[in-house]
Length: 119
Image 1 (cartoon, rainbow, N blue to C red):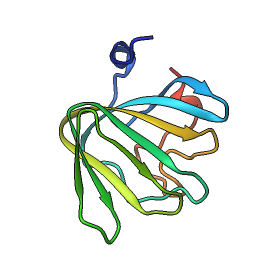
Image 2: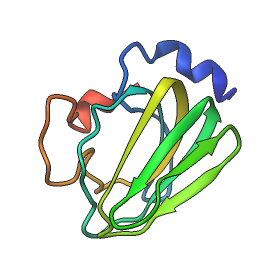
Image 3: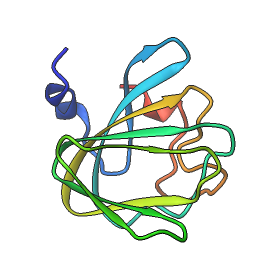
Image 4: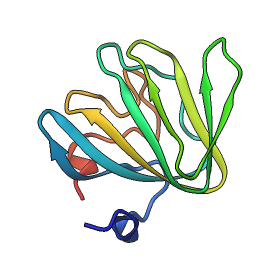
């Protein structure tokens, strides 16, 4: 599969799509633009972010924000409050446990069920 080609079927920002799975992990792609992701955490799961294209602002509670660029990878450890945003369109790949809820226990207008994340 070509990772960049998988973004052609992603038509909404903040709406991850599952493109494959490895053991108990989903591999997802998402487009980010704006500041819609609420502060949240995942109580029991780590979350991997990989920047395919663009720039992503990664905010971790009580730490300086980090601007991630194409090719950067970041793992948010379980239980850590975080949020992401991007001034311009950013393409990301996520690797998450199948039990990971999109925005943790925080529900917002962008929160997607696992069914809504089907490719």
